[in-house]
Image (tube, rainbow, N blue to C red; front, side, top):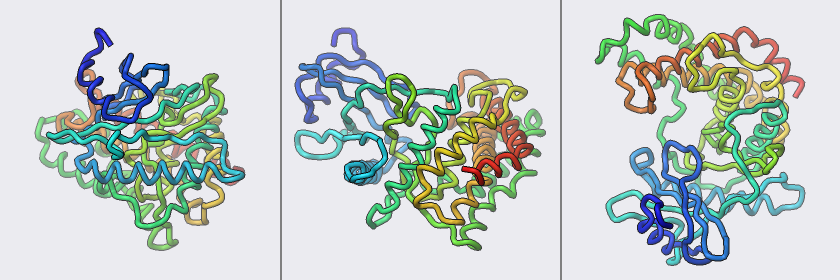
Length: 365
């Protein structure tokens, strides 16, 4: 433990959990932006993930952890059934007092998971098969949670996918223009407002076709699926803090938005941003195979516009933050949130130009 930042505190906290032995090693783990995460090794070699929870992003940690306990427990039982998908459950480690997490006296808290051995995370789908595997896992995740008993899960981030509210926030910050940035982002602002009709698609489908609320993950990026050590097969869905009621279009759309783009989300060149159609076709196959048993006609219709909707929504959020002074998304350089917005806008245009091919891929899947 020598030289590990916060080693005395980590040793103290680890001692509060029912780990198999005393803490021997710890190192920072993963690339998450919300919680602080360590991979810890105990005497005997057992490994765990220890996380300090961010009470600023998630002020109601009771609700977050109640959801995580219900979801992990339900998934473990579901995966033990005959014929279940070939996935591994994410297992929590209780405190020695029997609680699911450790509260900090001044707010915040800690939790622990068993480390899922023999796995790795991928930041990008390098092949269509990797995209297929991730989509299969997220689709199966939705199907496995379709019969989660009531009551509904807590809404850990209220109105997270209220796209119309996101557009109103953009209009308001553009009207106030607190930092005088609107002039330099006029083209992006006009392009987004011209696509504001996308914000009405999900509410209209819910009203007219009965699109139902489901249990959704809400952060379906590739790095929230653990792959086997060869990077060939998805084996576990992780990062469950935003699992709550929602529409499956949001999960499929964010997966499409984040996995198909030829330019990374933090890239700076919108000219390189484009939908990779073979990757989309793989995502469609995987998601429909995994979630197919629970999808109805309204769900399937929502998948047709899910990718453009989420590219639009995230572009709106990036531009809103740029105009407001970069208060939400971390930025490494001035104007990075505007760059991110431009990349998402270019992806949206690419999706719109390939809409027919995307629809055909969903029909074939």
